[in-house]
Image (spheres, rainbow, N blue to C red):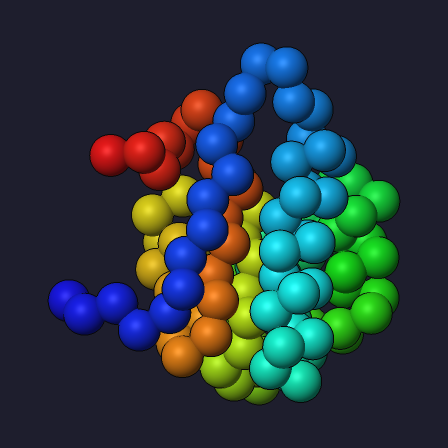
Length: 117
């Protein structure tokens, strides 16, 4: 499989809380959005997932694009754009990578699905 996006990864760390990790990921995708003139997309496990941290809530409010694996077939496809995926599993990561084609993908890792391998 060829990679056609720029990837960034925020590993889970004991000293970093979820808001700090989300804020770093949001800042990265915001820079990519500014460079490309494109709105960003957030991928979470559930729709209320954007409410997990203030940074994610602000991101969704600013860009208006939020999806989940379950909403993939129920909502219009948000199209290709810089994408932030919050604590993904394999399905979410694959979905996010598809949305990030030709743009940037940033994943916020959890210890339940490690991204360092």
